[in-house]
Length: 197
Image (cartoon, rainbow, N blue to C red; front, side, top):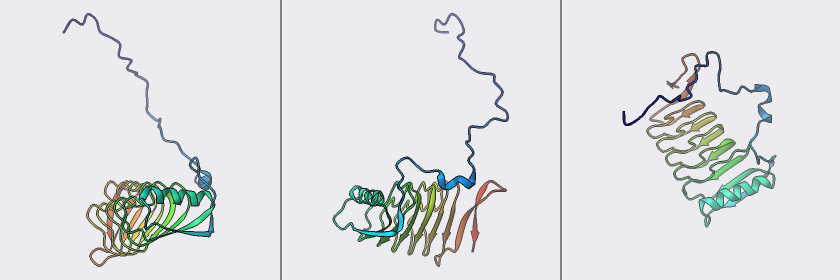
């Protein structure tokens, strides 16, 4: 076989792995103590507003983070103009109110904030969300809540195709005329099911 003279030991292990896990378990009563590096304490009664008419998505997201660092717990975003990727990557408890519609990939990869959108959202809104609450007062595009890990998503209008695709946890409620359904995790069956309201 191509000049191989002897077998090599490939370092396979015959150690018994039964009964072991790589999961880390935490005490649920201490949930509020678990935070990400760089999280800040915010006062939810302290409120500010940001007009993003002339801002790019990166600049607006940085202004939201700066407001958090100053202790603002409620941030109102005016004139979002359906721009893409607004409010992404927020890993802090925070109230965010968007006074208008969002484009694609809005409020994705979040863990903790409560978000209210007074308008529509484009596709892949709230994708990879870990925790928090999102309320959309109108319609949502396709892939709404894709790869959802936890938290609550509520759409008062209709939602597009592939809503909740690759969902691992959390709840999605759709209250539109076409669909009145919600997705939830069925712990006994270890799967997700679609239920009619």
